[in-house]
Image (cartoon, rainbow, N blue to C red; front, side, top):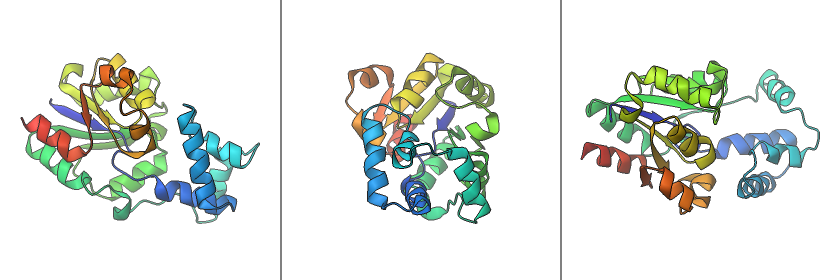
Amino acid sequence: MKTVVLDVGETITRDDRYWASWADWLGIPRHTLSALVGAVVAQGRDNADALRLARPGIDITAEYHAREAAGRGEHLDESDLYDDVRPALSTLRRLGARVIIAGNQTARAGELLRALDLPADLVVTSGEWGVAKPQPEFFQRVAEVAQATPEETVYIGDHPANDIFPAAAAGLRTAHLRRGPWGHLWADSPDVVEAADWRIDSLTELAALLAE
């Protein structure tokens, strides 16, 4: 593998702060929104549907901008990263791999991620590209920035429908990360087992596999 591309949410960052901040903004208990997220995930729905269940008729985009204006917008710091992120990415770079972070996030999240100065060659989000997973165009963009053939590029993510299946359809190699609700819910799904080239429990595990 010449290029390693990583998803963001529940791959390199925990989603805890994201959902907690939405619960606080909407004035509902954090565990209530967490339960709603789990419910929509189990049904294979968009996780944003949890917000729509909590507040029927909500305009998520308008609320997002209202939060930003109120100084309660997106935030990311070192505590949001999983512990294996920096060691694994550093190992991949030492092995000579091009490391890219590309996920379904806002343009603001892209700025926050780059401010963390991660050991990556490129950090980009769907908000900056104007196209989101699982659309094929997103993975076409991945292939364009990979600077390697699809067979030499691996996409790592936790969500089969957003990450593994469309990446495989684009001809990329794939690694399913058993992390977070999506990663664990479908960990042993026959479709995932068939589509993923690797099934891993940590990013350091992938780095070790590629080193071999």
